Image (cartoon, rainbow, N blue to C red; front, side, top):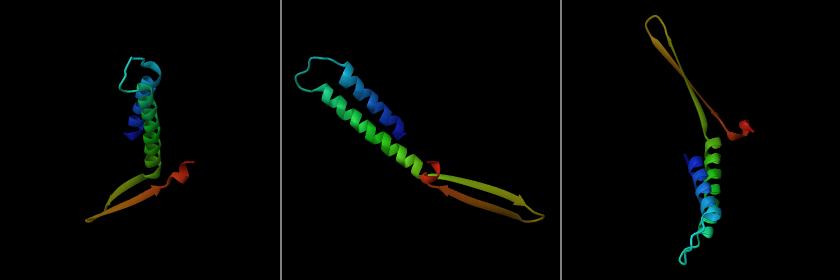
Length: 84
């Protein structure tokens, strides 16, 4: 979710900085565009770090015997170092 929000901020900031040329005496849209692009880059990087940092896989195996049930659950967590 935050990766998409970062991309959206970058795109909106680029539109404000480079494409909009409205006469305005109160607000500098170019500066606001640059600020939004910087914030979008920060949000995008934070989203990537959080996505890579926490990956978890749960596997549940159910084996039934002659009268009892046995459930085996194994949890595997991998860090971002494995992906590089």
